Image (cartoon, rainbow, N blue to C red; front, side, top):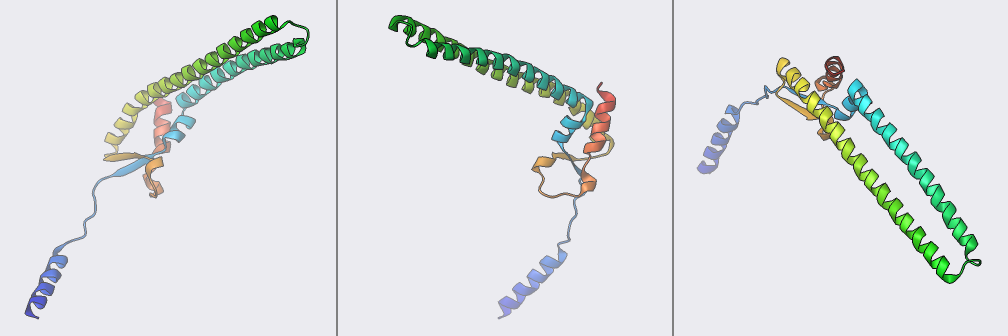
Length: 170
């Protein structure tokens, strides 16, 4: 009984001396997707990539239509051509299709690499700008909005960063 009493006193003293602490760290968050979509430099990159993609798609659509026409012609000539001629034409057609697929895959890979490189350059340009802002405002941590479940909207510095980037990157 005495042991329980002493334990309770010790626990009361222990918990009463613990003070609630509040962090002095200044934490902010930014929406990187919003920064890319709403800065002049980000919009420029998106527009260039979209134009490049559209022109490549048009080129491949023309090639695809031409291949479909060749396939239709082959189907029409099945009964007219000899088996050897038909085999040769089908073989050539398959090679053209394989070449078309390889070209398309190469273009897609090149496009993805270009996209990665362009955004990499963009983020290398904006990182020092964000760093200077963080130092100026004495912010300890900046997080990406995607990784935050819930936060006060006052900690969102995205619009301020967008203005800074637009001012500094032309």
